[in-house]
Length: 257
Ligand SMILES: [Zn+2]
Image: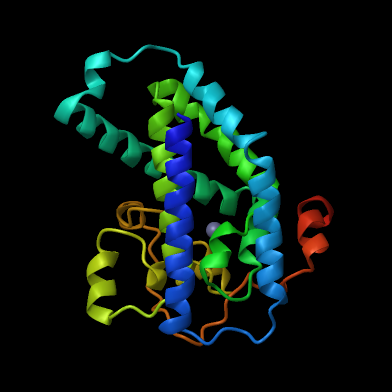
């Protein structure tokens, strides 16, 4: 298990560094001059990274160790094992889609998720900009599918790895060849899809919820018709970004209109 967690960390660091470098070579939109935004995003990520081994990882392990039924061990070997793994990953992605919709629809959950949406530009650092409260709540709620489906802990770790790699990619400020991005967007969430989710127009913010596979938005009629432009205003409608401390406190002090 420790080998898998180490492999996860090394893989994600490689993905982050590759995309972080690539978006400085071929960028889709001009980044803001001020570097303070990067400090805010990294600051939130460091809190999550420090707290994660203490809270999120034990929660994940707890769920995987308290499954309500045992899977047949034969379901983990050979081609059947691979097929079951793919099905598990797709189910967890579907769960993440609906959880993301809930973060936008439930006012108390939006207070947490709005910290992510207040970012006024998008790049790879946006993918790690989440309030610790949202990360913990998401890990808690993921116990529901994990315990009901007896999802193996290794599968959950693989899913978390793919999810974060996907988030790094679809938040990134990379300029991809139009034909390539269009082809990819039929299968996975690309920057052009996810940037519209961060458009500072509420109707667009409440669309394009998919995280890995792009099919969910088409299937559940939440795909926006808005086409991404390099100068579209990014953020949460009607509010501005906050200081680092302000972002930490925002879910507790903000009053709903
Ligand atoms: Zn969102």
